[in-house]
Image 1 (cartoon, rainbow, N blue to C red):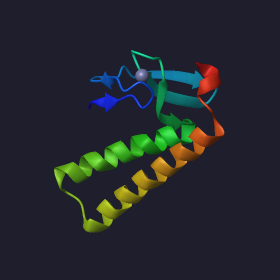
Image 2: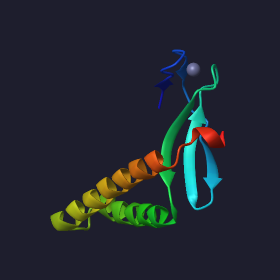
Image 3: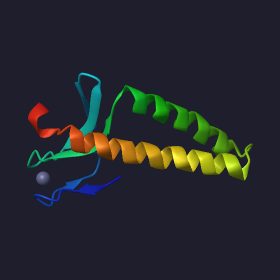
Image 4: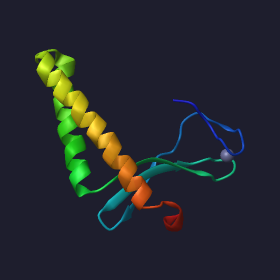
Length: 99
Ligand SMILES: [Zn+2]
């Protein structure tokens, strides 16, 4: 996964993912090696981390192919909910003051 820094244009071939904890909240991010700009990947709380774990288990079952269309829809819904929740948490918990 190659990423281009929005700030300085550097190509980041392999972002070095870091996590930082703020109480219950966990941020995953990486820094541009050239200019140090921080890029947030995800923000989770305890509940969301559990939901992501659930999603990973469910999606492993989908990959094996032994599930119904109904189940696949449910898995998709869990994923969408998780992404939405992560965005909400990201809005409520800025990363910058922690870096
Ligand atoms: Zn940069």
